[in-house]
Image 1: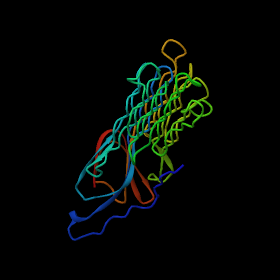
Image 2: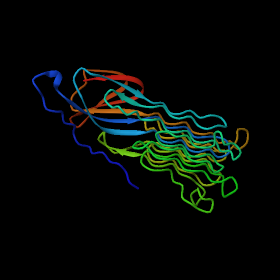
Image 3: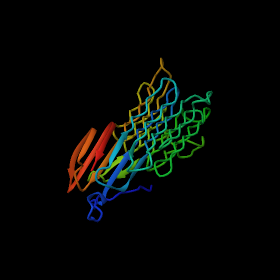
Image 4: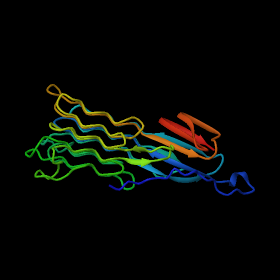
Length: 299
């Protein structure tokens, strides 16, 4: 498995000029969108992990950047899961991190909401050989296809993760893992906080057999009869697990997606910060962690 890694090096400011407003400030950023919710009814697909973007960008003193943190997708009774919300830092970063795709509804007779939804990472397909959703390049990966309605165990596809496609190893049914499960894809590892953390894991598919695991980075485990799926972890962008069983009989509810997060790391302190944000220090750098809603930061 290939994993994109970002170093824990200090952030260096650009060269100074005689004019204060020409000074460049280099920021290290991590933008994580909300994870998608799992699908429900029969065996739903797991929610896709929220899109993850990490990098460096220059700003200047006095410029205010608007931070938006995407919420996790909500689950729907007997339906496909909803996508997670988008996250962004504007105008610092022009690219928007897209919310994870919702998992597909597990129902071999319904094509309208069986496939996984596309997003940052794609949601898993619902049981009935439904296709997984498509992930966004440089943000996430595809969700897994579900197994066919006439083959093997009843299993929804796992949601894609920011660092890896959902696990969907082939067997006779053509789509599922050999043990009848479909795990969510793993997320991306980041060191922006000074410690190793993972973001954007996919949710496991719902199943009537062994447990489908959520991917590293906050993905929730899939549901089994009378055992609800697990929600994506808050502030990781993890996808929710797929549900199993219709309401009223051995029901296993689908998991909701985990909310996203935006982290800004800087060598100098901001002059103004608003929103739901925690301010800490790692080494000689300031760390601004936005955990919900909308906020601003100015250096």
